[in-house]
Image (cartoon, rainbow, N blue to C red; front, side):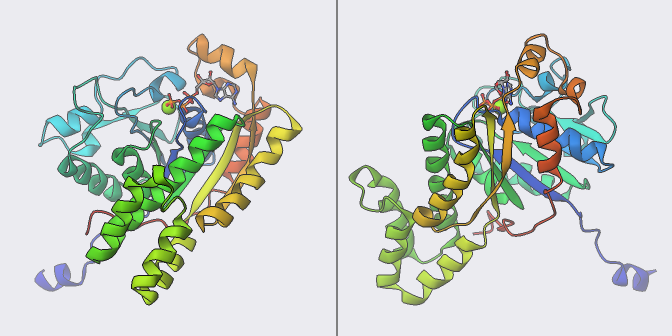
Length: 319
Ligand SMILES: Nc1ncnc2c1ncn2[C@@H]1O[C@H](COP(=O)(O)OP(=O)(O)OP(=O)(O)O)[C@@H](O)[C@H]1O
Ligand SMILES: [Mg+2]
């Protein structure tokens, strides 16, 4: 018996964690997260959606559900509740949901320990795909959920403000990543200065920061540059209406490589669909449009590109 236990390997969850985020509010992050979830579930994959927009969770609305009675807040409030205990059915086969928080004060600013608890429990869940929907902005909560994922998907709309925010979000992400990854004190202090002095443009780009690091520790500069180029970050342009809108994604990917030093994989455009908007106003589930909408056709195509990747898994919080 003891021998058998000794050879039995612990069960390793075979999941692919995808985070959907981007700096700007209202660009369609939640809509795309739910839609990709529906597409992957319809292809026979077990999928779990997690509403990590802790302040204003609303994924249930996209699924035509009433606000769930349990969610992440219960998991955090009751130490004995396992994460399995807050997973609910969505009415769509293969698709489950963990709803967000029920307006508990302070939920939008999780303590470090709470974040670690959520993240380590998510990693153990046995779903083929786990999609984490993030709120707007660049809070540490949001950046950290993005960074523990195997793959991060940025959603932008074609508006200049959204493009700018997506760029800012990505830059904050890289600074956060470097700040956590790099243990050398001297480099950490450079990164902190870079973040603090960004208005003075001292380290406005990640390249500026890398150059400064290389001057102090030439080898570390190379290592960091290699890490950055292996991040798996993808981009979707949502609410596209014109030819000009449809050309923005490629340009943004090129700019990210040039100014941030990271590859961003442009996955495609999703059209603006007024019927979806009207349906959401009437609280219809997104499922009603599957697959009869141009936007959904595009999302189906995009979700087929969601192949498993393991590059972003950073062992975040082990530092
Ligand atoms: N492709 C689209 N076609 C039509 N309407 C859309 C599309 N994408 C988003 N919308 C509309 O934009 C609204 C906002 O979308 P959504 O809530 O997904 O954005 P979000 O980025 O998650 O917002 P927040 O930052 O507040 O979480 C939706 O309710 C919907 O009405
Ligand atoms: Mg949202």
